[in-house]
Image (cartoon, rainbow, N blue to C red; front, side):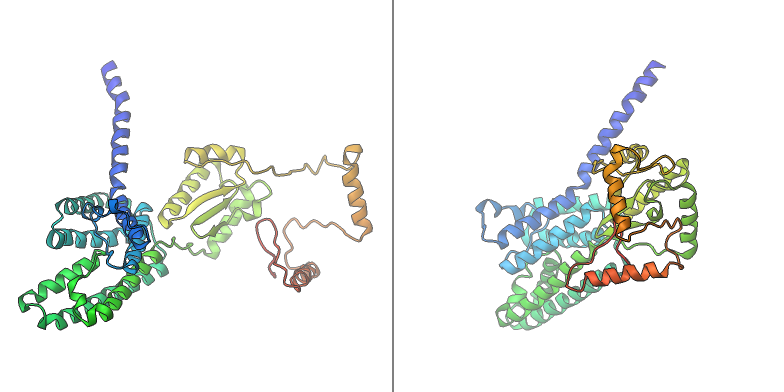
Length: 400
């Protein structure tokens, strides 16, 4: 029994080591593609470092550094592709597979770089073996825009290479025409230099512009594909059910706002703790975090309670103490005594100035339209002189 217990005790350590190794291996494709992009970025600048010259032959992708402009475009595309892989983007996985496959052919047939070809093949195998890791979505609109840009770029590149090969027929032996076109296209797909084929027409000027335009389209598609997923559409039934749960289980001053989370780019901010029974609140949180991972959002929680911190910390959140929420017991609070003198005088001055306090436990609703109109007039008058619109703690004023 002790031996069994010992082996069981050692098992988690072995599993942890295996998981750590897998995590390290899984980032290799993104790191190597990013390294190729970094080489192109440095070469596109004024920093032509001699130490970097052998790197393209040691990396799985040999970027096009024939011109500063093409090097900059290749750098942006490769770095964007690397970021997409690091985020687990599915569309980045497909594009990386196509790029590395083309790079493998280019390294074997054109450059004869054995080590680079081995790295490209290894990256392909890692991506295939770890394909389930890449399940982060891109919004449908962004995904379609990216596909259109990639399709346009690919068709333009194929047309440019085809025209180049056709015009090069009188300059290059016919037996090599097909190979020339294939080599140029493969090199272009791998973010490399299309080479001799493009240089045969008008010294490469016209077709260079075409291939650069095609690559710009592909790079723009990569950047568009990095967009986070879109917010799922809500239904009236779902909103009514969420409101009922909030009224029953919600706590704190942020009760009316617990139904929604705000988004700014990739950041998704939840207000307060998950609402619902404690046994189900954690599952709701896990489901939301899974949605964030799938949609490429970065989750954050604003005004989490002390009870809600432990589940958040267990899921990798880091707590920052920003301030304290003022909460009063209205049944026992009063303005009597010297400690409340300043507040008492302030209230008296406000009453003499014509201010009054009214409590609407269910919100403004439809009845107090004069209050609605007054708020709108204050908001309009404030902005007459070009001053910026002001807002409340978690929202701006909107007409009811």
